[in-house]
Image 1 (cartoon, rainbow, N blue to C red):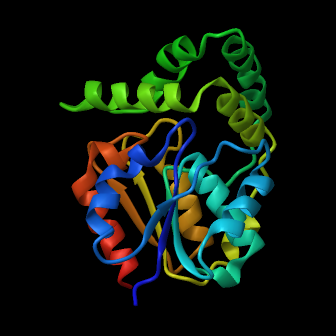
Image 2 (image 1 turned 120 degrees about the vertical axis):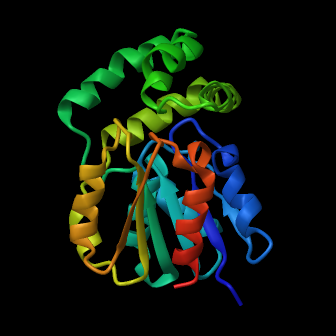
Length: 231
């Protein structure tokens, strides 16, 4: 029996971020996407996932989802059969970035979620490609669905997130570390660091992709994830 797969989406994203992966893997195993909008700390988000997840499961997270995935592993390593960290960052939030979130939060509370997503976040997500406009529209639609309260809670969780490098040193399960080659938010060198922290891990850098390779380059992303799931 194949392990269930739990997917954790990035900030202001929902299950649509993993549409190609759900289509690729749901015929062979249970696939679940856990929302990340109900709490304002990474620890509480991880605890909530563990309350609702299967007894044991494969875990994959992208960006903020990867940050929460590391905390899920820290809280209950015995329940995670394999781990995938996509376009994410094991370090605590830098003070400069934490401070930059404050004006974003203020704008969103004032009703400017769409402008914050359009002007300050979406341009950093993707590399140029034929589907860029369509993917950006999907990102905006996901943000609209989740709304300003989720934006604020997720921003607070990221501001106070813990450093997980020591946690990664203790990962023994099959691990995939994957990122877009042109990811400017979580660049490849962050993933090389995680690869060094987990020596037996597999590092895959996806060409012609930015921060969202699950949508930008679904075929090579699915290929890497299929190998990981069948290790």
